[in-house]
Structures are given as structure tokens and as C-alpha cells.
Image (cartoon, rainbow, N blue to C red):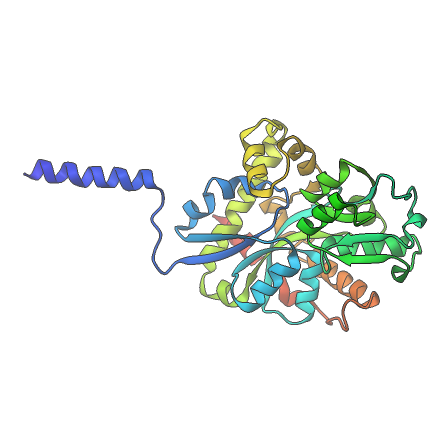
Length: 333
């Protein structure tokens, strides 16, 4: 009888192991992600965050950083992926959030594409044309910075507020002349258009942009172990890409997983990954990023938004909205 009982216990244990991690009933978190192509999508697809934390994670896909900020503000989302422009706007309004990981220093992964046949061959041809961009996004900030660089009054251009999915549909219908966006909408636009500029070039003009993971302060205070585990898994995924990224070709398992979560073409994944810089865990807490540089960039972004009348004020300091604490904790273990 004891042998039968022991065999049953072992069988149940084996079944549980095959079924995956067991989550505590009270440990559930809502995380907002976007369709941005970045290395941690592999960890997300493989369930690495759940394995490392033991939590049940409800992954919610969002179309733009502005939508993520709204969900975070309402309390529906605990951790979210946003760009520097919506992050700066949210911080200026006093949203109780902290930046815990710089997900990408954006390069040509975001670009301004002009439609073939639109008559746009140079920057000044944008005057009077319809340009679509998600408002209060990194691409919106980059578009305004580009217009400022070209000495083009934004009022002389028809700037339309469209989400990436709406941009793709409007482009297909021929309703717009240009769009500043990221993939997969960017890839679709490139099929019948050409890049006029991108965020790598705009950064050289003095307006760099980045993507980041943010957390609600109340959630971070109550569950620091989960936030630390989240940062550690993300950092590990970035280190893996930095070490073995050359093997992440279009036919690789990594490209397939990223394409599945983002909607981007597998063939485009390697080039899109190369379009941004992905800081490792050791770099996160440095003076260049969470240790100081991110605070300065948020301040500069807020000043730019105020100058462009996209914000009615800016704060004296943005230090309260950036923390290197979890990166340091994740690195120490």
C-alpha cells in the first residue's frame, strides 16, 4: 500500500512539473508590453518571468505608450513599457511611477517614412502634407524635433494622431502622405515608401529618445522581490542578445518568438534589433542611465514638450521618477 501511495505522489509531482510553475493565489500582476522589437520578448515567450518569480503574469498588449500610461494611472497595469516622451509627460503630471529599466536607446528602429508618389523628396516638401504619428509617443517627440531642426512650423503640416495599427490601415488606403512610427507598421510603410529620417539621426540633432520599463510606486514598495526578479530576467535576456545576437537570424527560434509577440516579419527581426542599443544590467545603474543620465534626458524631454506646447509645465527635478535600486539588487544576486 505504501508503495502504491508513493508512486501516486511521485506521479502527481511529475505531472505538476510538466505543467509548469505553480503560482500563489495572491501573486498576480498585470504587465503592459508593446510591439517593439527587443530581446526580452524571447524571455516573455519562454515564460522566464513566471519561472523566476513564481507569479502569474497577465501580459497585456498595448498600441502606444500613451495608452500604457492611462492604464498605469488607473491602476489596471502595475508594470509597463513606455517611451521617453509619454514617460516625461506622465512624470510632469505627478503619476506615481518609477523607471526601473532602460529597455532601448532608440536608433533607426523608429523612422519617418514618406509615401511613394506623395511628392515628398526633401524635408521642405512636408509642408501641407498629412503625417500620422501616435501623439505623446517617442516618434511624436522625434517628429517635432525633426521639424524644428528643418525650421518647419508644425502648424504648416497636418499632423494626425493615429495608433500604429491605424497608421498601417491609413497607409494602405492612401489617406496619409507620411508616418513616423515603429514596427510592424514601419515595415509595412517601407514597402511603398522611403525613409526621410530616423531617430538615430534625430538623436544627433540633440533629441535622443529611449524606451523604458516603469512600475507603479505602490506596487514596487509592496513587492520589491518581484520587481527585482523582473529586472534580472530582462537584463539576462539583453546580455544573451549582446553575447549571441549574431545567431538571432531570420530563421532562428528567437526571431520566431519575437515575431509572434510583435507582429513584425521574421525576416526583419535582425535588422530591427540592430536598430537600437540594448543596455545590459551592469549598464543600467551607471551614471549614463538610471544613475543620472535618464533623469537629465527626462528633464530635457519635458522642456522640449513645454516648448512645443505639448505640456504646460516642467518639474524642477525628475529624480523621483527614476531609480537604479532594482538594477543594483538584480546585479548583486
